[in-house]
Length: 554
Image 1 (cartoon, rainbow, N blue to C red):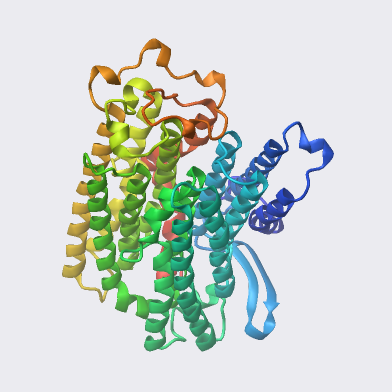
Image 2: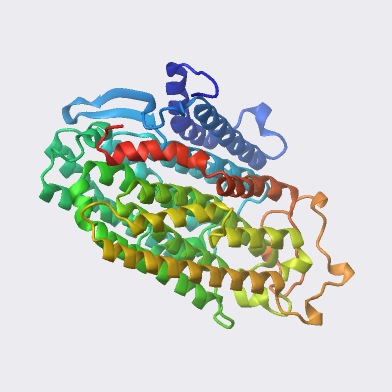
């Protein structure tokens, strides 16, 4: 069933447009603006260009989803298959199915919301032209990662995002941004070198880099030893990007230093590239190798769940001087642990849970980073002790809508039933209760118990954060006088960089402004929709996962 019947050639064009348009837009952003488009402010003109290009890509992605045949989500659709390097049998092969389509839509949506937010609140740094160009290159690389069906093209797209993210952190970030950017690039590049060796091993031993053909073969053309080596090599590169404990240490530094939109894109879409690689490449192409490493992957995943939660609890306690952005970064380590646990079960239930948790994490953590960035802009700090102090945020009293949205995002993140975060975690735990044949049931049930304990820890630190930031210290000094009340949203956005210049002791906080509501409302609405109607997403992913785990057989 398709909502609107769109011809195959138009679907092909739409997918190619979604992947290539941001790259062309990045080039156009760096060129001098035509006289009629400059307006009075050339910087605003290039920011408008970013909103326009990302908006066009989002519309194309939505039309692609509308034209997608929902009765056959396991079938690759909108495919383009052109020979590129015949000697190596490398092809420009694009296509989407029920696994990649939600990630494509998530990427297009988050990038558009970041461009819209940046139009009103550009982070302090060099030229806006460079900023817009880097965001568009980042979008193109991420979308290509989810759309390509050739292993070498996947690797190129996977690497394409590293340089723009490095510069977004290094040039537009906050304190310690150079060190954080270098740590990010070194970790991910070293992981990618090892991943490339694994990809070359698969291509040379099987005679093709085509991911569809390799998935259909289901590892029958590769010996078990080759599969084990390939899973180890490719898995290391993917685990760094995910990030899996103990390869996660670049993530908190990168998030703490990155500008708000950098953190949103890093958490919302870049982390998904690693887990997508596990599902798209390793599960169907090297199943015997995955079966060998699945217990170890699950063990690292549950350690990450507990470790991330304990790190968050340590940062949330009074007197720890914990940074709120750093805390949410550590929470991502725990949430991505659930995704890895679901993949490690090698069952349809577990893998569907992992894919659902991927999307839920992108929506909820993207919203959390937007909110924390807004608080930091208003208050000049993300230090929890300062925000909870006598002159702290106390959002319920000073910015009630901002406080309510932060509390909503926090309870969604801890997995409250009825919101998106619940289904992914529940399905991964169900998958661990009954793992695939050949995997140790007692071991995986132990992992399930540890993961369930991690959900309790998640609830603990999220509720502590809400209590401290939204309620603050209940003293007479924490109340605003009439003269200190925040400006109304109708007064318009503050000039870029102005909020960060305020002293950390000012009690003034603006509530949600119009442009912020426009950027954040879609994420909150989709979090509720996915929580109340999970069949929309699971109906897409389940047939594709069933086919993938069955070796290409529907």
